[in-house]
Image (tube, rainbow, N blue to C red; front, side, top):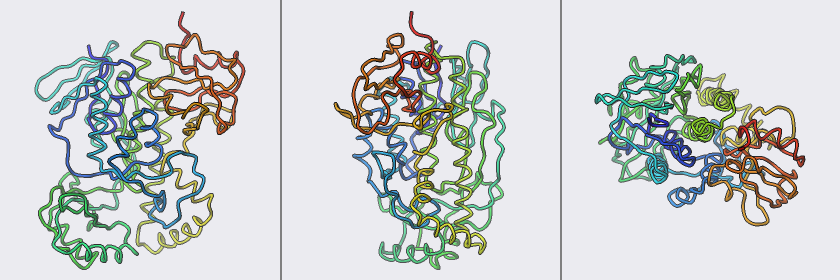
Length: 475
């Protein structure tokens, strides 16, 4: 029996597979596509995802292939300077095409021992008290202790489970594709600059091999949104919005996306869980979708591994939904608000002008930016120190950096007192005695995802909190 089957070999699925393999979990990733897609859906990584990669020691792979940009103007494209004093060691956006992110995360997962099966399409599943049975389109039947659906907004896993996916339907549709143009790059840049003064849902930019990424508002909402648009539809809309079709031709990929927001009623049914777009869909405003999925996987991975290993506290696996579903709900809310602010409707433009004024206040700019880049999240661990429930930035220690201590995906007791102990949990928690001038606490207990689970200097209090996240002490 396989420990965990992950359905979907995109960034969420491969991030999850890598996290599970850090803890020795046997993982099979099923991806229905026989080849990775070459087209570019997402364009970058925000600060929290960058931190996640740094926590696992693989950030440099991404930095080598990406480009750093200021964190500015991400909320509805409202021009604002990059906020000062962001609580992160990575105050930038990493521009990197999704196929590159997909490839690097898949490489990491397979390096750690995950198996990736392409052309493996799930068509049915059934679960009982002992595990999950998965039937594939080629007649293969597999058995696993757990199964996680990371298979996108039209998730087969979610549909087979019968999990409700309520929300708001698409009211505004946008065309997105990659194609060639027959005008000089200077002409493209000049037209785009002029049109985007008012129409923020428009753009043309080079991607690779002479191809351009083209984004343009659609003429209404398609009756069947699963049917891709035609190149003629792109030409017609480009002429309507920009006054020219740029001579577009030879498309590599044509698609459409809407502004629907939907949130799964449950992230877990028994031994089957959902993550990434399988659990939530929303407009791509602010570039949050891929990042949200990676962070879902980061939250779920160590908890599911603990469940497989047998030491998970009773409520640990359910805390995945309790923590991540509210985060997704907030993203759904802010993306729908941004879509409204992108509208050319006079009422929406009046709100946009007002918010543009408000964003000149540094606290407003910082607050909205932190929503987009994911560093303002605080899980509800109850009352206590201001750090409790927050992820801890990469603080400098006397002997290096905090994130250098988190590569193995274990818990961490960072202790400046030298008097504390996690001896009964040494197989799950690393105890490091060190000092940081950037840490306003004598000691902190970090979960494997870097969120602060305890703050203090009292051994008895620490011993009371360790079982909440790390189970009973070893005998």
